[in-house]
Image (cartoon, rainbow, N blue to C red):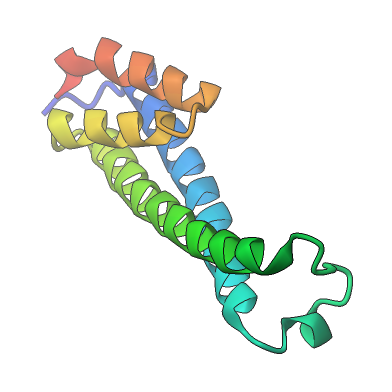
Length: 124
């Protein structure tokens, strides 16, 4: 195994890990907000969020927040796994999948991760 560490693949892996962590944090926050939105006593918990959207938005927003947050958490987990795979030079497919999952929420760092992992394919 070559001990010469390539910069592009390591940079792509680190970017995937960073974006994956941000996706997990923001997705988890959306899931928590969605769950709080389902609680009947949310006005007492969050008085700074007035109920101005009517009954329909009370039911729809928490559902979409929970689903969207769950999707972001899954994408973040795949991005972190792919980033770790890229740094360890284990699997090009998983590394590229992680970089793509880092890009899906339209993140410029995810685009850079895709480019760097693709350019570092020879290092696997």
